[in-house]
Amino acid sequence: MISGLFAALAAVAVVAAGSTASLAASKSKPPQKLVNYLVINEDSIPEYLSGRPGDPKQGRKLVISRKKGNCLACHKMPIPEKADHGGTGTDLTGVADRMTESQLRLRLVDPKRIIPDTMMPAFYKIQGLNRVLPKFKGKAILTAQEIEDIIAYIVTLKE
Amino acid sequence: MKIYQTLVAAFSVAAVLSFAAGSAVAEPKDPDLTDPRVKRYIVGEKYSGYVVNEPETRDIQDDDFQNPAFLWVEQAQSLWSKADGKAGKSCESCHGNPEVSMKGSSASYPKIHKKKKTLLTVEHQINICREEYMKTKPWKWESDQMLGMSALVRMQSRDMPVNVNVGGEAKPYFEKGREFYFQRRGQLDLACTHCHVDNHGNKVRSEKLSQGMPTGFPTYRMKWQKLGSLHRRFRGCNKNIRAQPYKQGTPEYTALELYLMWRANGLPVESPSVRK
View 1: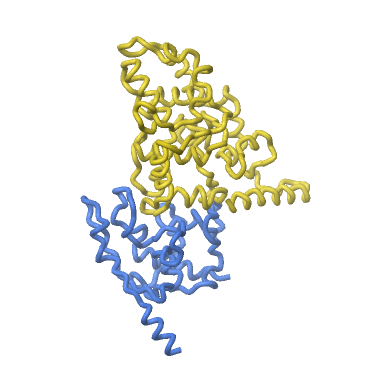
View 2: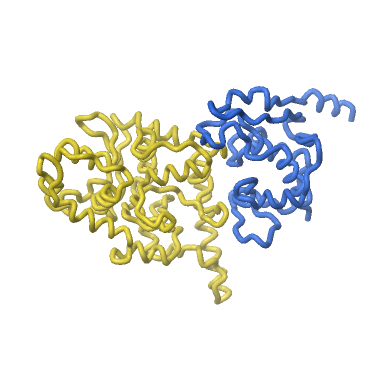
């Protein structure tokens, strides 16, 4: 147990998401300041990005919203009132039985750290992107609080 | 091409189920892959967007009298024989009857222009004719005249297999096009390959992803309510993933067109097609 803890501490990485933000900035608009977060064992982000828990009701709205999470574009979810669930991603029904909140958070923030060639966008990242439309340049898809709202909803997806 | 096999398998399973149950268990949207009309657009593991079209959309494409693209084609037919520019020439002056002179020509485009030593699409070639031989102004890429003329020229290769050359002088353009295809772009950080190779047959929301075959352009797209170019479609794709698009006719999109046509080699030309 203790050795496991040491291993985990050794694997902690601080991602300074905000510090290099200026590189991705457009000329006209200042880049969004992203909060730094800890990644443990290249597998999870244990802390709330916004410092406080999210609102699952708000999260459910965000996963449906085409301009925000738009999770339904690719994933099936237990949202029966919407007919148009996509099929390119995994079915998220029961996903919280398979993964912890911390694991889900990293998979939403920057899934390419787990699967480099995934189709899934990083929802909280502004670095390393190519030819972003000026309107979206220097902005993450979601805010830290929106990430937490979605996570608060996703952790309810148990079977 | 595992997904294509899965797609075919899913269709067969659905067909068997519907047979066994004696009723329509299969989703109405699944195409009947044994329908000879659909079969024409499946060559080996390649298939065109026609295959995933709704049956009603296929009917419209298959009937030139119903296909709205022919409003543009008819206009182009009259432009073909109309003199324009200082040279007093029309298309007909040099090329005679398009059904004879243009037969099969577009199936090998984009191609290297021998004198200019550069890669050109059908649209570029039309404007070279206008500027250099007719001595008149080039048409804008997305103008009704250009779309109609491109459709008129390309439809003279209908049902013929796409056959572009990507070797020799075309090779660097082909490499550039391939690089574009696999390059992630935009805030959503996607490359063409993520949707059109890894996930064709799967749905994004209610839209079934195709293999992104370029064989039917210019296409009459219901969403546009008009005929539109392949490069316009590229721009739409790029903007959907929140990427900065290029302009129609740029070297980037021309190289990409070559790469896509190479992917489509062997599939029949179906310009002007009809899509949702």
